[in-house]
Image (cartoon, rainbow, N blue to C red):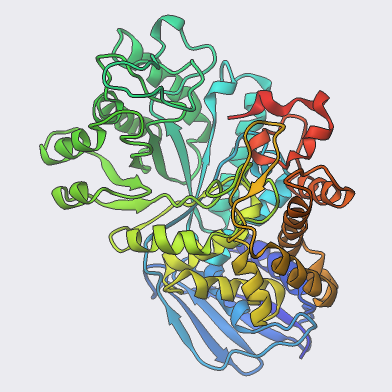
Length: 551
C-alpha cells in the first residue's frame, strides 16, 4: 500500500475535515498518497467511554482505528499513529502492529502563541497560523493561549485593534473547532495608550526596587490611586468582551512586562499591589466569562526587588480571600521554600524561544534539548502542565519536546528530539539526529549593539553540523529537504558557518545574506517586525529602521 486515508467513524464533521486535510498535507510531504480505494484506512471516532484525554490505537485489517475521549484526544491519537507508521519519505510505511492505550500525564497542556511585535503569529498569513494550531493539537496540546497587547491602541475600536482582535478571535475559534480550549493572557494593570495620565503607574528605583522593571510602556495604571482599580477594570472589560463568545477555559493574569508599579502603596508589586487586584479580576471574569478559570503568574518575582515571593507565600498561608477563585499558579521555577510552605497547584512556563539567542530565532532554528532537560524536567515533577512560550516557528523542535514531556510520551528531552527528527525528516540516521542535537552547542552568541558582530560563544560544533546538514540537504527527499522545518535548521547552519568564517559579521558574505533573507521570508517579516524576532539582515536597509519596534 502506498496511500493512507482517514474515515470518519464518529466525530464532529467540521473537526474531521480539518484533521483529514491536515493529514493529507503531512502525508503528501512524506511521499504518501491518500487514495481510499487501496489505502491504509484510519477510522477515527470520539469514544465517550474513555476519559482524561485518553486515546486508543487499534490495528485492523487494512488499517487502524483511533478512538479518543475528546476531539483533542482524537487529534493527538492520530498524530501519534502517523509517527508510529515510520514513514520513509518515499511512500513506504509500516502498519500499526500492536494496540496502544495512552492517557496524558499532565491535564493542562497548553501552547502560548505570543501574538505581538510582528512575529510569525502576528504577521504570517492566517492559514499558516491555523496550521500551527492543528499541529499543536496533534502533538498533544489541549489549550491555546494568546495575548492582546493593549498598549498599542487607544481603544478596542481603533482599526488596527479591530484587525488584531479578529485575527486572535479566528485563531482561538479554530482551536475550539479542533477540540482545544481557548485561553487569553492579560497583564494585571496594563492599559491602553489613552490611559489617564493621572492614574498611571510609577517605574522608579524606589521603595525597595533595585532596578526599574523592564518591559513597560508608560501607560500602565496604578491600582492604589483613586479611580485606578475602576479604570483597570473598565479597560480590561472592553478588551475581554471581544472574546466572551468563545469557549474560554483560562484567563492568565501576569505581573510584569507591561505591568507593575513601584509606588509605596503597590511595592513590592508581586506581593502587594498585584495581589490586591486578584479578587477584582475574578469578579470581572464571573461577569464576562463565568466558565473561565483564573491562572496567576509569578513572572519575574524578585527580579527587580526583594520580598515578592515571601509576601506571596505569606498570602497563600493566611487563608484570606486573596486567592479565592484562582485555579492554579504559573512559574518557570518555584523556590523550594515557597513550594514547601504552601499547598498550591502549579503549572510551568517553559522558555522555548528566547533562551540562548538574541535576536529570537534571528539565525534560524533554535533547539534547546539540554536546557529543557536541566530546567523543565525537574520542575514538572510537581506541576500539572503548563504553557510553553513561543515567539515563532524557529523553535518547532522545542514545542514538540515539551508536548512529549507534558503527555508523558517521553521521559527525557533527547528521546523526544530523536522522535521529532525521525518524523519530520523520515530519517532515523544517528548522524542527522546528532547534528540537530548539536545545534544547541553553538546557539548562544553575544553582540553589543544593533550594528555589532555576533560572536558564537562555543563554536566547536558549527563546522561539523554544517557539513552534516549539507549532506542531508542533498540526500533527503526533496519535499522534506525544501520544507521550512529542515530549511530553518539548514539555514541556521549556513549562517553560523559564515559567522565563524567572517569574524561574526552576518553581512560579510552573499551566502550569509541569502540565508538570512530566506529565514525572514519564512517568518513573514514586515517593515514593522521587531528586531527581536527577525534576522539582522535588516542592517542592509537602515531606512527600514526596525529599532522602533523593539521590546
